[in-house]
Every structure is written in structure tokens, then in C-alpha cells.
Length: 193
Image (cartoon, rainbow, N blue to C red; front, side, top):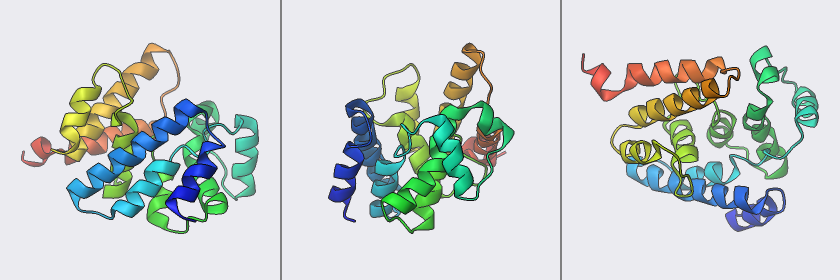
């Protein structure tokens, strides 16, 4: 399936606003991939499809995840808004024909991140926060640092997420905390100590 065919199919499964966000993430992913000299084609596809499972009903999504042989952990069960990352892996594979594991894993981890992410996984994680349509306090600094120190940008993005989740009194997924800690350990400032 070509990128244009993926766009047409995706447009039919997302709201107009979410589709525009996906195009923004695709563009930002390509820009960051060029900067970090990795495969821009993979970055574009992962960026475009990162939210391909966003509007699947949570109950249906958990049922589908189990059909794919994956048992959601307790944290995911309690934070179903994060289900679209893991489920997106399978939707991208089954409905968009994506077989490349780098792309699929970048989709899987884009919401929470994880320690030891690849450059592509980091790019999709950051691009989801920093695409041009995002307007919230702190996004400009995250955008600026994305091309200076990707780990520093991840730290800023996770800090913003943690503050937001705590302000709502919701459960914080452990992967987000582990991603933040991994980013701290890998920022250029910390690595020089």
C-alpha cells in the first residue's frame, strides 16, 4: 500500500482533527528523521499511522488485543486511553500491510514510550507532542530541543504528560515514568557527569 493509499484509508477511520494531527506527526517525523539521518520513509509511515487505532472502542480494543495474543497488563486496563498504541501495532500490520518491525514498534510505544527506545521510536514519541498543530504550554521548548538532544525533548514531553495526568488525578502508566528516567540518564548533560 502506498503512502497516499494509507492516507485515504486513514482519513476514513479518524476525525478530521485527528487526521490533521496524524499528517502533522508524519511531517514532523520526516523532519526529525532527516535531521538524525534515519530512514524518512519509515518515519513518515509510523508518524502517519501512529493513531490508526485511536477511535476503536476500548472494550472492543481490549477484546481485539487478546485475539492478537496479547494480554494487557493491569496498568493498561486502568488507562484505556493508551490502548491505541499497542492496538495500533496490530491495526497497522493487519489493515495497512505494515510488516516492518521498526515501524510497528514505533507505533506501539508512541504513547508511553519505554526505556531503550530506538531513534525511530524516540522520533515518533516526540513528533506526537511537537507537531505544528499542538498548542500547549511547554511545547515550544520541546520542539526546540528535539533537534538538539532527542532525550532532553523526551524528558520535557514526559514531564508535561506527568504534570497533566497528576493534575487530573489519574493513574500514571509506569512506562511513562520509566521513559522519563531513561531520558534523564541519556541526556547529554547527564551523560557528561
